Image 1 (cartoon, rainbow, N blue to C red):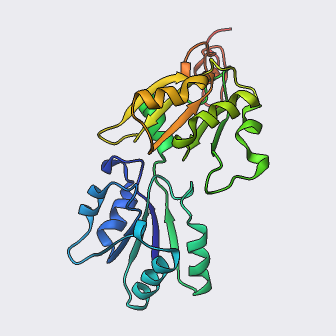
Image 2 (tube, rainbow, N blue to C red):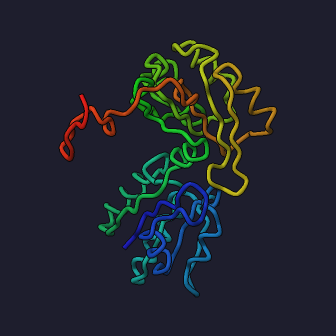
Length: 253
């Protein structure tokens, strides 16, 4: 069995209980060495074979999986955050399907959740924004034209931008071209939930300047939108005494 496990956003104690159990049981661990906190490798048993996929190709990763399966070993493929986001797991699962090797996916805490915790914010404030767009700038990995930053910016929803720290000037330009005002609140979160986590609040127009001032060049994500200010929102109806729900009746008109 191959288990794709979300390692969480950085802090080693943010892996799920299930993910930690799978690490304890693993005979082979292939981890994303560029982003996964190596403290998690201490959760493996003696004799566990450990591979850093940052130094491997897809074919090399699959070869390790296939060999481990042939030897009756349990393999954990340890991805950063939740493997469903920018985890490149589909291509691995397709190869496993071709060889009829069983696998499972254990979700994890994504860094966009860790970023919200670091900023002490709620992404979906009533009256401000009820939608979150998770995306990235086009770089060496292209982005479909229909999913350009500018096209998403037209919605003025909350936007979380991954894998784009080196393109912040271009990001600001696209956000403004798409519809955000230059003074729209924004934030940069460096290494969310790690010990050296850093949060920087700025505006859409000053993203690049803020990153430069704080020497942030990688391993960060950007949060864009009025929701970053965490003000001017409406009270939730769910806990409003004048609002009836399935579980309680309104106590006042």
